[in-house]
Image 1 (cartoon, helix red, strand yellow):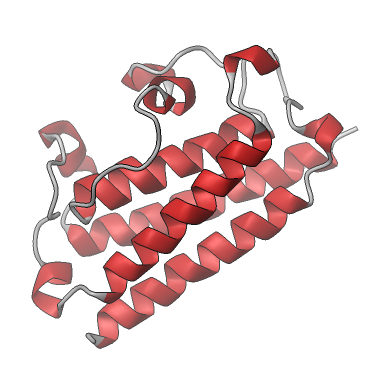
Image 2 (cartoon, one colour):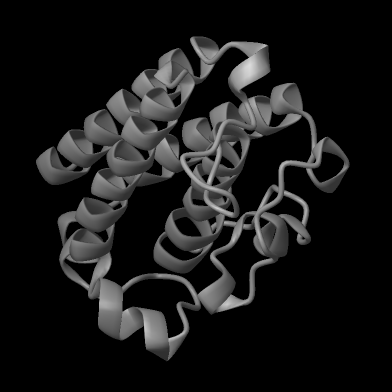
Length: 166
């Protein structure tokens, strides 16, 4: 195993562990808490992290088959990239438990795929079919992994903050 691959796999495993822990601490009554109307809430954030881990990291960077339902891209994608407007209507979303299970499963697959990378793959271009508009934003495989680990941490912090609001 590549040393770099081991480091990035450990970073992503830490992200999965921390996000799973934070998600487990969100009270049921706070899963739709928003700082302002139309802004993200813990369920949307968890779904967004799941969708991002599966599509961007798993499919676009690592060339894995996607494991989440295709409609989650619109449900949990930002509006500037074709996502639906965020609502607090539970009927607009899969259940918390379904999203959390998908996050864990996707995370496990991504960590295993990262561990299998060679240094040449990590240093090279993303392995999947990343659209050009995102390739410019995320860069090669290694830059994408760094960016997406920070992305997970950023949204995990938002989830924790929203769960703590009164």
